[in-house]
Length: 175
Image (tube, rainbow, N blue to C red; front, side, top):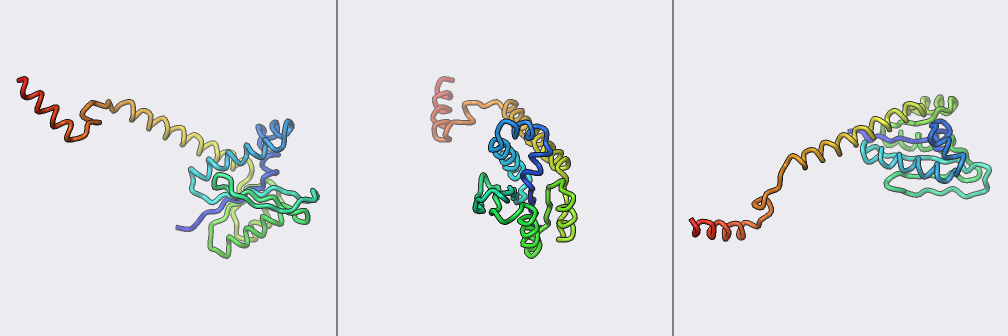
């Protein structure tokens, strides 16, 4: 099975999802953390490799990369845009014969990723995929809870076999 990689243009998604836009107004760091949390759940459910890129262009900072809950979080360096980093990541993943998805609503970036062999997912499409995954996770939890509630646990289910044998012998002596 071909490995699947989802590369997310972090600030583009934050600027497109209304809940993250509102959070960004209060605190940009919280909006980034919330997006990463959402992507961690999505990664855990889908099994896709997930990389989120945040633009540090013109901030004077050095680029960093870290794993948070299995999601690779990249902050570009001061001389690099998120688009440039995404293009490089697409090229690297293409060499590894991975199926690549790039989540962005940036038209120019969409065109470049198509040229690099990646499939485009708009910010709205990613939001739909995330909500579908969240719904499926909730259904699994509900089903598991329902199954656990329907199965009654009896004493014999939890007794060690040797203890059950002793108790059975005692019971038979009384008869």
